[in-house]
Image 1 (spheres, rainbow, N blue to C red):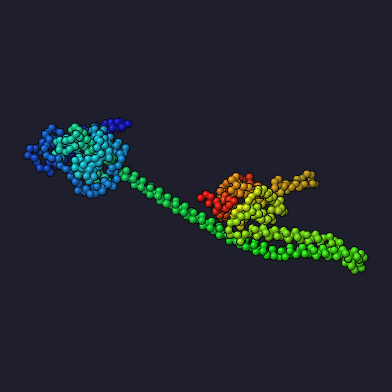
Image 2: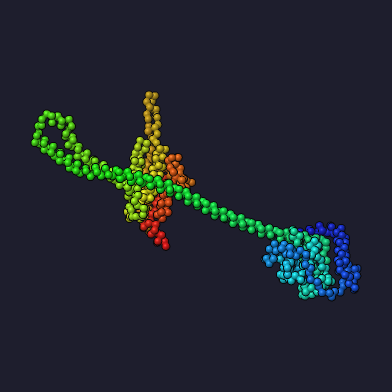
Length: 566
């Protein structure tokens, strides 16, 4: 592939050779004449003999000492331009090696170099046919090319050139005879090195080879520009990545701050709400408890008094079986026999009622737990039952639904070290949501009335009832390692889709209508279980398959758990 491209280049160039050769030799003649005018004529040479060197006419080597390379007048700026590329002492690169190999092939030389000249050396970025990586600047052929950046430096025979005849690279085993180098000129006009072809025998280059060498030199400079642009691009990309990472970190911090603010807001709202509710519940329970205690405490005395009065009444009836008319009339009016039979039952019912009120007051006080800010060992079942008692009015059958059945599958649990008040809030939030879902499900499956006409004069109504009842199942057990209690609260409601289930613990997320929910109940519940107790709260649900909330609480509390981990 490479040989074909080169041959095609030579084929194209050959067509221009005849027209170009005369012009090229004319330019060389004028250039040599200008050089001779700037140099004093030697006594043993004439202008004609100098010009004959263009044709490589054999002559004796001069005995003059080789001159050191001239220093460009813009040397300081040239070195800055070279250092800007950051290419010195870098590893070989295939792009430069390809251009060097092509230069050697086109010029037909065994050696080709990409040479860069700094303040005291020439360093080879790419080399073909040479083992050295650098040479001193004062013996470098390439250093001579820097002073004429617009022209090729051609040395047909170094032994016959007074600048190089005694150069160590010419007289030593390196044995350089031919040199052709095109300056590598940057975009701002500084020659930083050369692309050169070197041979150990004298030779000429054709105009086509010279033009090809110039073109390759421009490609070397383009490769250097590409390299520095790629370096700038990499730095820009790296900087952009750092900026992007910084923005990501900043965005994450902002999101975390926003999440913290939302959680704090939710906690404040819920804390204020539950504090107010707890105070109200505790106040109501206290106010109810005092008169109920008075009634409940006096019922035994009332019962005793009533029994004594009834005994006395029976004694009167025994001693005076035939009372006078007025007494007889009054007894019939008040139905004394019924009073004697029903009064003890009424007192017994009052005692049952006061016992029930006592139970409700106890549940309300147990639910509020205002006086318990520290962790303590409590009966989990007691908290669940207290919550169910408060929700009892929503579980009973009504005209709109058939009621909700509560199935309790309690295991044998030890007392759990926890914050009882907040834990009761969790039970209330989860059970309330379950009741809401079941009520919605029952509304959507209301009994339907089908009007069926059996004859022209008779119409029959058929009522279609729901085929299944609503239920909530509460089960408790110990984990396999007996370090946690596991509480499952499941229902046979409509279930929760995946896209909603992924967000139910987010603050202020709710699917309920405005005014029906705040979206903070489950968020607060998650924080209470996970962050405050070091437990686990999961939601398992599929549409149409109901929902289950799984709570895992360490028996010995979060503090003991952290100590065990340490």
